[in-house]
Image (cartoon, rainbow, N blue to C red; front, top):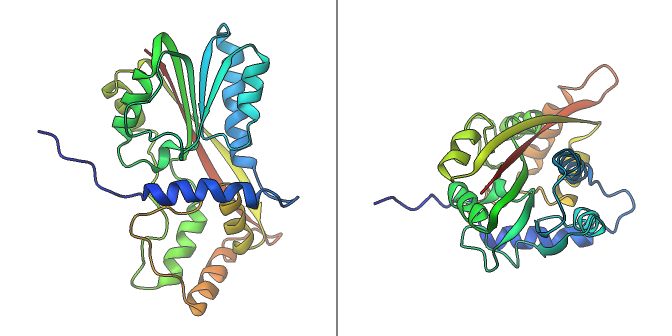
Length: 250
């Protein structure tokens, strides 16, 4: 008898994080480079495979750009967000020719189960694509947070999907023709505070079930100094996002 997966993420915090994005995106300078990169990757992939128009589901695209593009291509699109779809349970609707998940599967407690449910929501011969932040993303931010806490570092950032383990996960979930791709997105910052603000604006803030206590004022200053200590000669720190994209079918 298999045991239940550990509770790492808080589903209520996931929903609240997603809901906050709309308000934060009202700023003219609000960042959206991560989701834009994911959508571009998915769009290019779909153009390459040249699938005929059919029924499609899009999960997690708070910009609406991908769903709009699919509708223009003739697909009948159903849009889901964390508040309307529990990815760790069987989908309320199935039989989709295409399923696309954008930036949501990195914060589910049962990733293998979510991948099974995603496959089961496909029609026979359907295609699923899931893109998320994973790998060794945000190394400089992680190091800065560890330096902020000194000898007793707290869990301030959640674990990420290792692309090396992803092929096995897809095979366990029964995806046919599984493919795992990883690409790097590099963004440069002159301050830790702006990086953190950009993460929150893009719905990439923490949703741990047991969040660490807030940093003290001294801790914040140590984190800022540790982050800038990794700056290049121009005073900017290069931060990397590793985007993992999973593709397969039923």
